[in-house]
Length: 281
Ligand code: DGL
Image (cartoon, rainbow, N blue to C red; front, side, top):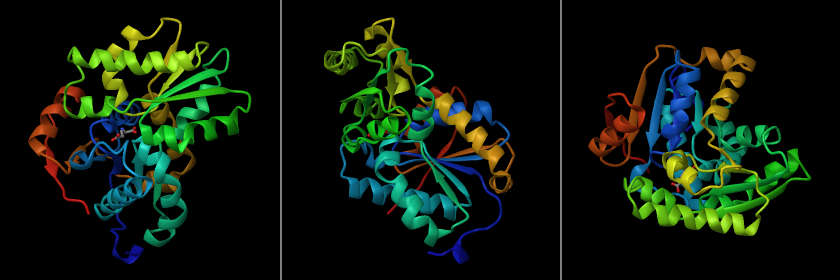
């Protein structure tokens, strides 16, 4: 594909995740930038991405980005840490120049890393994330660039996303796994005073995470920081702001059952939405 085939008229801001997690980011972005149009794409049929290989996450993410570009988006937010960790850099450096050098893809790791130094008091920071994000070491690498003296400890939580994608996260059975991974993290570094919820699905488990987390620890969901960073980005890039339509509308696409997505997203966003099915790949 080259830019000859992509629509050049302004379009919605694309927001992509493997499934429902990106809705936590979309919600915060829409609170801070309600005037824009958004197109959300959840690859629910292939979620979770967290235990998939680097190559697959990259392929799936690139397919989603291309489709969002074809559907008119000039700016796409990877509202997924796993995709941000495993695919963002390659897409920005290798694919965008061929797809359309004027379009942009942004992730969620950098905006989170940038603010953490203002939050931790003792510079002991924990990361809870998918196995893929932890294995990529993206948080460690980025945090150490900004704050070389920071103690960064990661813990993979392989069952949290499957619980959420299967709508089991409010059930009692989820408590065991929430406590298990939190305990494992705090055993590794008992001095942690700040925990990044490094997966956009995890705010859906926030009540349970709070219940098992010692009260003095700050829990950091990413939504507001990603939204603030996007506000800032659009102020610094007025040409991109002009390429994003302003109508306050939001559309939803899923690679799995649109009925299931509609039901779950309507509950989470507390507004009536209607998802459409899309096939990727
Ligand atoms: N929301 C994605 C993230 O932030 C979940 C990845 C998955 O599908 O496992 O990493």
